[in-house]
Image (cartoon, rainbow, N blue to C red):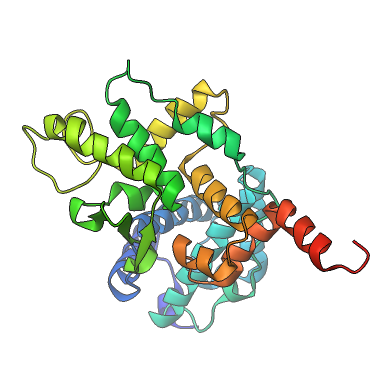
Length: 307
């Protein structure tokens, strides 16, 4: 094993984690949000290493990494969070090999838990209609809130993608927008007439007043005129979810899940849904087949000879 496999204390480990972050950003070209997620995972991993008394990268065998996964399980993380931690470990150990700290990656032998042991929550069409009309005229910025909620459901876009939409990305008359997804991949996504009307009302009435003393090209802005972040959008969705008594179940991603499931239920092709969602792999989109039992029943009834 190379001499550089020694940690040399947690300070040296921190420098390696910093180098890993730079590798993710500059060589892998990952988005800021993804890099920050890896950083959080590595901070947790570093904390565990210190508690476990790990003094060299070479000590991190498959068995030792198994202890870390057991630690994560004891922390009661969700299957999706554990899976992301495993993905982070795999990427980090790949970096350790590339940078000469290790000869081979022990993390390559780890298996991720199923991401879909817990089926994502999906709103019914009735619940979506109720949710989208929660912002009322007697509330400040109800036009902005209604336009934002409509866009989340109409496009199935991630909260970060909606937050990053600019006026130039929006083609209101043609009813489509340009989304910048993971890995800086662009895609064109259409939206509904209801979303078009909501956005036009917001642009004509509320946004000019909000940006009177601030200059930004972002579509959605706060009451102070600054661009809204994905955290702002998350808080806004939670605010209205509480009114439905569903704060624990509903998030911006719930709108994305509902978008995909409802499209599938109406007979949309899986490849089209993959493109609209910006999934790199069709296998990710196929998970919605498990959620949409109505479509499976309909297909079974249509094609099974004894249905």
